[in-house]
Image (cartoon, rainbow, N blue to C red; front, top):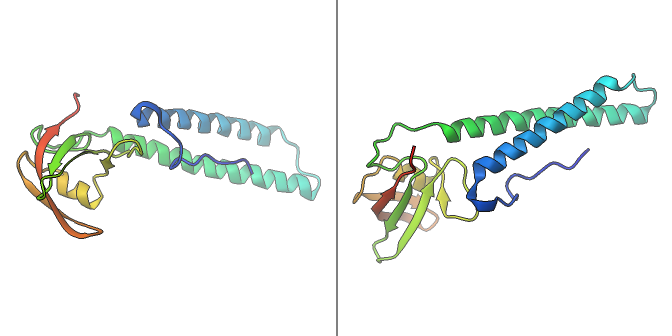
Length: 160
């Protein structure tokens, strides 16, 4: 079976996750076309080796169909605008947090996390605490070290 791309470890240039996912989707659709043509043109398998090749192609085609479905759904969810007021944290916002010890951290709330920038998803513990939070609000969430808290110092929302 052909090697399958690992979306988790693929480097993303310029923080353009959406563009990388769209490129991956195009590659998967092209491979799906190739496999479908191969299966269509192929005569009925004569021996066990040909049958095995046929089964591997069909398995790869099934895997590709699932990946296309998953990527399409991920892109749809990431593109949805949430109904959060502009002065509150929503998906796509960058948030400056100040912890009780005075340390600060900037995180981005995103449906498509990127390894290169600190990001949280809306369904993570910190993401759930951030969604809907207002400037100056103190948030709490459960982390590996126990209950954590921080104050929302700044909210930067993407332009529409």
